[in-house]
Each structure stands twice: as structure tokens, then as C-alpha cells.
Image 1 (cartoon, one colour):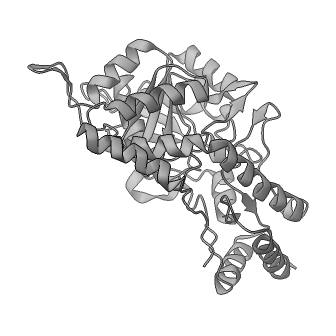
Image 2 (cartoon, rainbow, N blue to C red; image 1 turned 135 degrees about the vertical axis):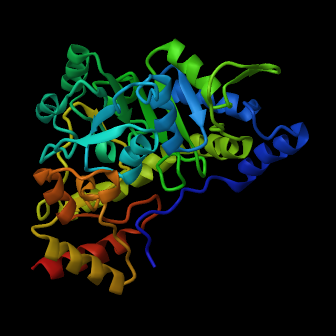
Length: 365
């Protein structure tokens, strides 16, 4: 079976050497040597400052909300955050879990990112933040979103789970907003098995978050605020260091897979419109069909031939009851009903991609 994605596994001997060091030091967690090394190397590789490693991407979002005061539980009215319905459930459920009501506004029909034109009408006295998503690693309209946030004194937390290494106008996309969060889940371009990170704009927010991920403990006998256990451990960091060592090789292989898909299907199916100033990371290959019926048929035909594709992101989140009933967001609902992510990972054979093209073409014709 060809999976929709496959975790990248780095050189086993190098990973073993890192693990041998862990055994020698007997230091498994609590800001160990490898976590410190990975923090510094990621800041250098990504071209950012104020990066904090955490145990997963969902906690990265939740820590960012708390460090920036978005989920302040002492408010008389329930805080709200404007976000996109076209995203993985964790973007919205992390808000809801933390006592913040996600308020969905519609997406751009071409980029599939949150459309700034829809944001201001959704702002209320309870709005505390905007939580846009760099969908599939595509850049949001960061200038327009940041301008709206400044006008209304709102925080901006970008869910950048898909945007590892993405450049925008020659610099890291992660530099935009008050914070940007990353997921290092096993299926991501860069991973630590499980894990995540937050990139803060301001040093003081980073320092507050450092306390939060360790139960609020600041010394052997001092606890300064409410916290949680969100620390990355040394085994996760060891995997991350090995994957980072091979990042250029991985990126090159994925870009070749991505390009073969574009050559084969780019003139037949709708692809995501990427910003002209974007340096992409080839993390996903989503395509949009003419109808939901086509998507269902193509996915079923691929599965019959041993190929797994995914309706990613489906359903549009404003339709998910546990997030709070809201009106339809027509563009998101439409794209979500017609989209399919095709398999992409380092080492996917060209002949397999040819097989996928053949199946897709046969079904839609």
C-alpha cells in the first residue's frame, strides 16, 4: 500500500550515536543538552530568534495563546479568536479547549488561506486574536492581517504547522505575527517523532512561555504561574538533529516528486495558488476536482490500486458541532468538498506517480 505520506527516517547509526550520549549522561528531559543544541540549530537554519521547543504542535498553539494572554480565564466575557475553517481540527480545538471561542471566517478561493477581507466584520468586543493558517505551507496575506491586528489591538498567532523552512520575500515566514507555531509530528517535513515549536516575536513572551511549559516552576522552591508539562525530551531532540542534518537531501527529493505531479496534473486539475514571493517546502500536493463526486470516485479507485489519498481538509470546520454552531463559510465548504491530497514523500517512485496520474485521468474523463 502506498501511504499518503511516510515519515522520513534519518541515518540509523547517527541516531544511535546521539542515543548513546543520552545513555552516558542519564539526562532524558528538562532542557537537556540535545534540546539546547536543537534549539540553536533550528534558530540558525530557519533564520529566527526566540524559538521554544515543545512536546507537540497542539501544545505549541495552547502555550502561545496563554503566553500572549489570549486565553485569559479571568475575563468577564468569553474570549474569541478569528480563524479559518479550512485547517486541521487542532487549530480550532486548541482554542476551544483553552476556553477561547473560534470564530470562523472564509478563505481565499485560490490560496485557500484566511481571506483578510472577511476578518474585520467578525471582530467583536470579545475578540482577542487572529489565528490564521499558512495552509499547506502557503503564505497568508501577512501584511493585511498584521495591519488589521494593529488597528484593533489584536494578537496574531500563525499556525505554521506546514510552513517549516518556508521563505517569504527572502526571509522566514515564521517572523510574522506575535508568534508562529510549528508541528514536528512524524508525518511532517521536519520531525522529531512528536514535537513542536513556537517562534515568538518578543523575548519577554518567550521567557514567560519557558515557565509555562515546566509547570510554572522557575527554581527548586519557586512557582511563578500556572503551567503545564509541554517540554520536549532528549529522544525527540535526537531524532530532530538527525533529520535536520539530512534536510537538504530530503527537500530535494520531495521537490522532484512535487514537480512530477505538477507536470502530470497541473493543467488538468486546480492547484493551490502560491504567493509569488514564496520559497516553498514541497510538503503537500493537494488537488481540487470538479465535484465532490469526482473526489470520492478518485479516492476509491486509488485505494483499489493500493494508493491512499486523503481528503485534507474535510470537513470545513464551521460544520463541526462540538466547535460551536456557526453559519456556512461557502468557499471553505466548497474547496473542502473537492480537495484531495496525493501521496508525497522522499523516495516516492516516479512509476508510482505515473500510475496515480493514470488512475486519476481515467476516473475524471
